[in-house]
Length: 67
View 1 (cartoon, rainbow, N blue to C red):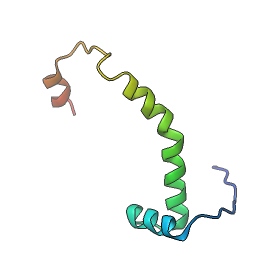
View 2 (view 1 turned 45 degrees about the horizontal axis):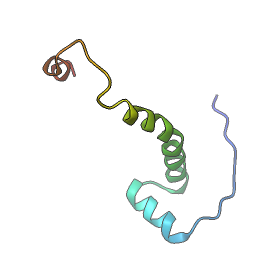
View 3 (view 1 turned 90 degrees about the horizontal axis):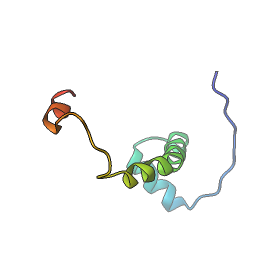
View 4 (view 1 turned 180 degrees about the horizontal axis):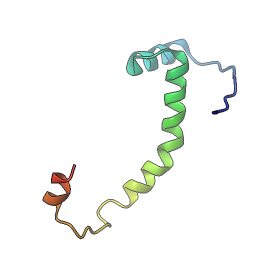
């Protein structure tokens, strides 16, 4: 079972409203999604760093067709 921690956070109302409109969800899910994006940002940066440096053995057309 997943453990959770209840927290109290003060955020600007306009920022929260913007985030909720963008996510289309309630406060809890909006905050969870934001935290997941922050946690993943290092991985995204690492992937961007590899752009153009990885050689594939299969042609691009084959990779696209294999979706």
